[in-house]
Length: 391
Ligand SMILES: *[C@@H]1O[C@H](CO)[C@@H](O)[C@H](O)[C@H]1NC(C)=O
Ligand SMILES: *[C@@H]1O[C@H](CO)[C@@H](O)[C@H](O)[C@H]1NC(C)=O
Ligand SMILES: *[C@@H]1O[C@H](CO)[C@@H](O)[C@H](O)[C@H]1NC(C)=O
Ligand SMILES: *[C@@H]1O[C@H](CO)[C@@H](O)[C@H](O)[C@H]1NC(C)=O
Image (cartoon, rainbow, N blue to C red; front, side, top):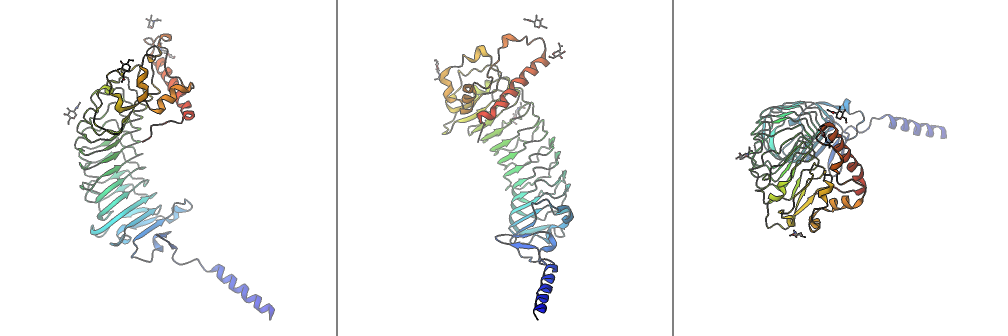
């Protein structure tokens, strides 16, 4: 009798360990999460995540997907992570009744964004970060009503005119960390407020910015600009970041007409002139303008006519002439940034160059080496000071 009982418990145990896990591997809490597309049983979800941020075995789970099989008129949030290896075209092209808050595709394989792969609909934030995108077909996103579009971490080298949305609702475009060399004029909608093209290979933006009359933030950091793009028409700019480029000079009137400016970051270029400081816009601003020319090639700066009351000037890491650096009037240091002051007072970083000890006319490559050494030693020490242009 006893033996029999034990045996049956044993059998139940064996059976229960060999029953496959739940048929649908979706997990519902505040949002439904499914491991694969096959697992989705409920077709009326408002919020859905397919895939996983964990890397294990994801390649086996990547499939061909058609988005109109997944997106419904009720859906507000959809994230697909590492599950698409081929994105098929939708049957119906237009879904005027779909209004989504968030559509995120991450870690999928979509080399070319083609017409009809995404049903035409309205999406507040549309993120296509990290999907191996090399090309966007003209028209593929043109009629989508998107407010905030992010195409970062892909392999785009060119944006064709007509590839991006032309919707008047377009406000933010981010195309960071791609291989962009060219954006065709007319590609960006004039209602755009924020444009971020950080970490690309851009040398110029000929006529691309001309019509962006409402632009407030422009980020072109870590590119290959040797001259500042023409910003004449961009009167509402608040933040301009062209740090880590190859700018050699700044025209004196580059920012003159921008009365709303808050931050200009020109850090880590090769700028030798500073007349721009005397022609910054003066407005009845409450906050001072933060203007960084850190880690450039200024030898001296004439601050006499600067209206520095309204400007926090960040100047560490320039090739100041030791002879002339002493002459900068003390009363102006009040308007310098905390960073610059810490650099100068730390005693750990070089802050000027004794030009009389070099014969600069003799050898430019030798001079470049000296500059590099000067900047390297400042960077090495900058962690100790822990200061950065923060905004
Ligand atoms: C910059 O753009 C403005 C307006 O489009 C134009 O009038 C001006 O000539 C341009 N400047 C340069 C240096 O190209
Ligand atoms: C700074 O001091 C110099 C003389 O010491 C004076 O001529 C100049 O007006 C002062 N500048 C400011 C901005 O107060
Ligand atoms: C600097 O180098 C130039 C070119 O090599 C030479 O003509 C000049 O005499 C040098 N000047 C000094 C002060 O050594
Ligand atoms: C300039 O200096 C570098 C190294 O300091 C040297 O290799 C090079 O030959 C020099 N060039 C000339 C033209 O003197």
